View 1 (tube, rainbow, N blue to C red):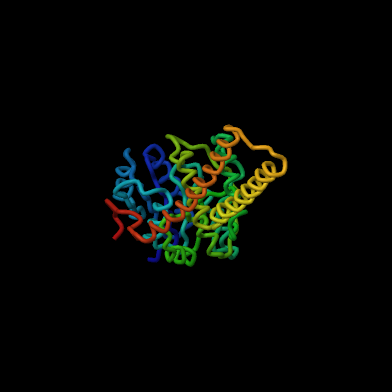
View 2 (view 1 turned 90 degrees about the vertical axis):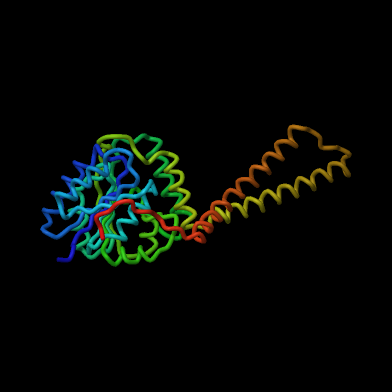
Length: 309
């Protein structure tokens, strides 16, 4: 019997949440009356997450799992699930229970209106600090300004897509995955359903500020050349100011007989120019790093255990 729904959930040290997650997902999917599969992707957990999902798989044939040899990252875990899923409709949902599984029904109802992608848009974000909310809001608005695509704001990876979108995603060979940007880039018909994001049930978040920063870099460098243009423009602007300053120094010496002196002003100028140069080199280095990743063409992940053939 063909699988109608595939639910993909990446897990990293979610042993405290995975039992409730499995129960709620199963209840929601059973209510639809359609065939389904739940694919848990263990992204190198150090707790008992793997043992829990292996138990689910033994007792429920609808449960499938992939266990990585180490942590390869949230986006790669989602992509691994996309490569292995069989459903006509695919749900992406995190395993921390901040995204209520019950919203899946509303996502599917919206999709039946004729959409290829329906994403869950957060009305509120409970349990998150003001700084985290502000940085996320700032990032998505900046990203939409510097790229040619419109990535929906106030959304995460929690969404429903059809098989056509999934198949096109699998053709994209980006080594640095940024799925919400890639889905927007495809250009299929999309809509959204608003919901209230819950506070994390148990444990600590895996989405640290360092992870958020790397995620932002992947998003910007993956979909925009603006940083490279900014580095070029910064060089031009600094060069113009340097030229004007040279002219001023010459005029002051030849016309007015004044010599521009001052250790402090010289050091400020050197440090400023050095900062601009290092910043520009860093931007170029990020793009070169991504080219290097593509040239090496290593596998995105390594599976240690799985019940998917």
